Length: 122
Image (cartoon, rainbow, N blue to C red; front, side, top):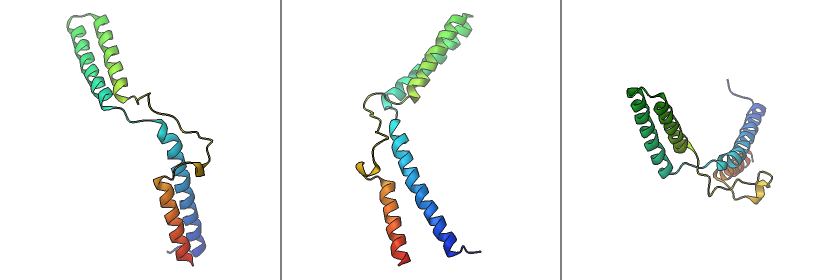
C-alpha cells in the first residue's frame, strides 16, 4: 500500500532531520577518538604474548606471583593495543556553530538531497 503525499513528506522530513542530527553527532563524538597507531598495536600484541608466556611460566613453576605479574603485563599490552593516541588530538568545540566548521560529507549529501527534493517538488 503506497504512502500518501503527506506521509511521504513527513517521512522525508524525518529522514533529513535524522541525517542532519547524525552528522552533527558523528562530528562531535567521532572526532574525539583517534585510531590506534600501528606501533602501539604491535607493542601491545607483543606485550600480550610475553604476558601469556609469563603466566605459563608461573603455572609451571607453581609461583602465583609470577602468574600475577604475567597477567599484569598481558593486561597492559591489551590496553596499549586498543587505546587511542593521546597526542595530536584536539577535541572540537561543541558550542561552535555548525556554519563555522568546514562542510562535511554528510552535510554536502544533505544539501544535495534537499536540493533534489526541492527541484522534484516544483
